[in-house]
Structures are given as C-alpha cells and as structure tokens.
Length: 120
Image (tube, rainbow, N blue to C red; front, side, top):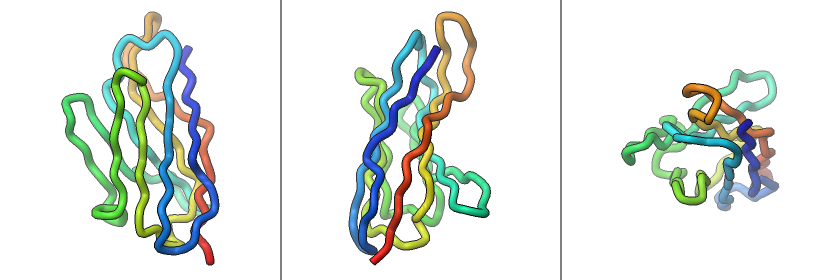
C-alpha cells in the first residue's frame, strides 16, 4: 500500500508564489518518477512537471521558467515551486509517483489533489 499526502495549495494573487509538497509512504521499494498533474474544471488532467530517477526533469510548456520540480529521495517527497502564478494556473494539482512495492511492480499512484486558485 502506498499513500501520498499533498500540502501547500491555496489562494494566491496573480504574480505570487506557492510551494506544493507530496510525501509518499508505505511499502515502497523503488520510485521511478515523481510528478505533478493538474486539472481545471471542464479540462482533462495534464502533466505539469515530472522528475525521473537519474535527475532529468520535464515541464509543460505553459509552466517552463516559472515552476520548478524537485525531489528528496531520502524523504520520498516531491516539491513543486510555483512562481509568477497566473489565473490560468488555477486547478486541482495532483501528485503522481511511479513506484514498485514489496507486492507489486511499477505502477502509478495518485494523491488526493490540492486546490490552487490564482485570483485577485
């Protein structure tokens, strides 16, 4: 069993910053990737940023140069630093990891989601 606990969402004015955190726990053997997705009302869920074991990262074009993903492997935690936030960044943000456990091979696990609202 794997549990993901997210924190850090909230209401922020345009141009402001927020930092999301997602801590993984459970019988995890290996984490292959940690990332963030978001879903706005009426839209499909989309990848925001991903950090792959080995150090590589990738970002949606819409957030490049504004968002930074980082991970602390020892704490099994992934962060998303969001700067210069825009109203169009408003969405529910979901943490995602691809991990293997003591009883399963690599598969996706999702957090419960945290609301980010950018509004004046």
